[in-house]
Each structure stands twice: as C-alpha cells, then as structure tokens.
Length: 436
Image 1 (tube, rainbow, N blue to C red):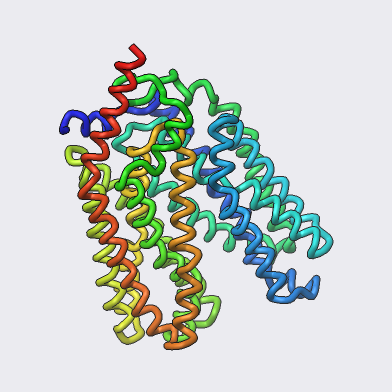
Image 2: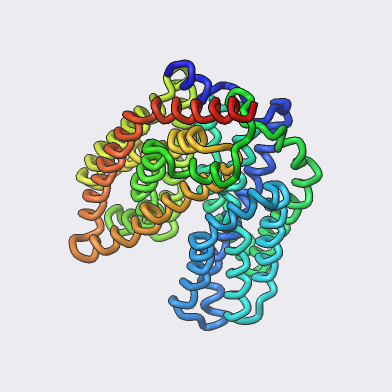
C-alpha cells in the first residue's frame, strides 16, 4: 500500500516541461483569471452611474450581475468536458476572447437589454475558465505543488474581484463608466493574444500516458468515472463546499456588518471588508503551500490540515462575533478569515490526485460546482434569512458552526484517502499489464 500511495501522490509533473516555462504558463493563466473576475465584478463599481443614466431598478441591476453567476453555475461542468475534447489551450483562448469582447460590448451598450445580452455572453465565456485554467497549471508542475497551485488560483479570483471593483471605480470616476468596461476588455484581449503564442497545446499535453508508472491513458469514459469513484474525492467536493459557505457569507455581508456594528461609513466599511477578504485570499495561498510541505511523506495530512483549519475557523469566528465591536474584534475576525478558506488548497490537491489527468478540467468543474451549490451561493442567502430574524450580529455567531460539518466530512476523507490512492494506482497498474 505504501508504494502505491507514494506513486499515486508522486513528486513528478504530469507533463515534463522546464520549470521556468511552467511559471510563465502559470503567470499567463493566472493573469487571465484576474481578467475573468475583473470583467465580472467591474459592473458593481458602476451601479450608481447605470442606475442614474438608464433609470434602472435595483432588480434590473441585480439581474445584470446575476446573469453571469447563473451562466457560470449552469455551464461550468458541460463546457469543461467540451474543453477536454476541444483542447485546453484553444478553449482558454476562445473563452478569453469571448468574455473580453462581451465586456467591450458592455462599454458600447445603449440600453438595459443590450447590456443584459453582453453580460450573458460574459458569463458564457467565463463559465469554464477557472476549472480548465487550473487543469492546465497543475499539468505542468510537480504533483507535490498541487495544494499551493489550487490555493493560489482560487485566491486569484478574489484578488480579481477586488481589483475589478477598485479599478473600475477609478476609471469610471475619471473617464465615465464605459471606459471602465473598455479597460477591462483591453486587458483581457491582450492576454488572449499572448496566450497561444507562448502556451502551446503540444508542449503541455505530453505523451499519451498518465503520471502513474507510465500506464497508457485510460479511456475518456473510464476517466469520467474517476470523478466520483472514491469516498475521498466525494468528501473533498463536499467538505470544500461546506467550508466556503462562510466565505460566501462574509464576502456579501461583511461591509454591512462593519457599517451597522462598527459605525463605519459605507465607503470605509467596503475598504475594510476588502482588506479582510484579501487576507483570506492570502491564507488560501499560504495554507496551500504549507499543505504541500506537510504532506510530502504522508499524503493523508492534506485532509488532516483541512480538519484543523475548519475547526480553527469555527473557534476563532465564534469568539470574534461574540466580542464587543472594536480593533481587538477586527483582529480576531482577521485571524478567522485567514484560515476560513485555507481548505481550498488541500481539497484541490486531493481532487487532482484522485482523478485522472485526462479529466482534470471536469474534476475542478465538479469542485467549483460543489463550492457554489453548497457554499458560495447559499451562504449569503442563509445569512440574510438569519439576520432578518435574529440580527446580523447573531447570524454571524451561528454560521461558523458549518465548519464542524465540513471538518467531519474531511475526517471521513482522511480515513479513506490512502486506500483510495492505492486503489487508483493498482487500477492503473492493471491497465498497464492488460495493455502489455
């Protein structure tokens, strides 16, 4: 069992490329992720200007934002599967060009209906980028860096959201709201042009073998089965989604909490909340790096770290939101948010290690779907419902308890992780011997 586990969690790249080239791929792919979220979130910075110019209702403004999230939720998985067939690099370029041109369409829209159509196309272009992008990145780096890469990639989405709102507000104030959309579009198009010139499909695809013992690549249908074939991978999906319930709630409601209970003006509350959320993004990266280092000789420690982070988040935030408002409370909240999303790295690495390389895009699409359905989407809604009944301060005291459920799921994953890795390695060896 030990030999199979080490092999399945090996320290070699899925595709061998020079490390310098791998980092170039990461930089370009990460840059497009930043562009993705900047194009998605710039709308929030110009809400007041659109409302005034076109006399829009809040419902209409909400629909311009919600249509993108709806498209991402509905199409992430099927488009990720399509990208595996069409080619990851070609798919990434096509997606980036589409969302960038659609963002440019937002800049020239003359009515609500035209803007809604453009935002629909933004969502269509962005739907599968996160899952396909991280699949490209992990394919060219050593396996023992997967938690770091997954955490960093997830943090890129949060950084892009903050930059989209901040830079969009600056451009809108200086040059008008149309210039804000145009700037985001140009950034994305420049990267979309550079990407295929530097990242070649032939260099990142490699030979038709897997990373396990040189075994022939399994059929695509068999690879799809690996998405749900082990208890550990299912637990990685569910545990990550449950834990991100807290992040989803904090992203939406933290500015309101600071405004109501700390007496901050809306602009100061927004800036302070953004700083706290960026700290959470930093935690994604740092805890991912720590996970890779911790689990080099014991792969199951990925799940162990996830359990610890969930429980630590529960304790810190439960204490923080029972403290009186003030600087000390903010420090404890910051500590809680620093660990709140730290499971993204370990869970992403577990998903990658337990699924076939041929369907890593689809695997991360499944993880994204779980994160949204179990965490990022219901978190804000449930928090709002609790706030209506009990007050936002009490709601924030209750929601950290979801981390206990997430920890329990990761505990189940830990119990099965080594045997599931071993089973996957044995299946690969059997395929190799059968082919021979």
